[in-house]
Amino acid sequence: MSFYSDDLLKETLTRSRVIAVVGVSPDPVRPSHYVARYLGLRGKRVIPVNPAHAGKTLFGEAILPDLAAIPAGIPVDMVDIFRRSEHVPPIVDEALAHLPALQTVWMQIGVQNPEAAARAEAAGKRVIQNRCPKIEYQRLFGELRMGGFATGIISSRL
Image (cartoon, rainbow, N blue to C red; front, side):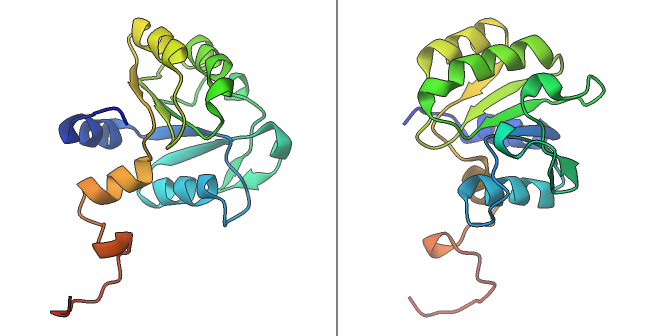
């Protein structure tokens, strides 16, 4: 796993306001769904991207077929990629070509592509690989409890 400082992760999550989630699923048990939903509940505008579900609505937004379909007036500053590592290069290339406000390319846990990361970094973008923004947000902003669950129960039992 690549090392990213807590300060870098926290700053990235704080500054990211509009997040395109590539590979998002409308199925609520899929990780891409609940991560995107969580980000939306934290005040982020989530733009869902998945060609298999294009035209449907998710989180109050139309699911788009690809990043190029995002209207120019939507300032996407982060792309969160829920696709296998080998599918990342064309997604990064499309993001660089069509998202002028892009600041961060984030690849989910298990997703890494050094070549695509190098292209994004050469274009001046921050790249985070093999991490989950939901997990990092919970960890860095005090929402994660023992076992990863925010139970809301305070107990002296171990």
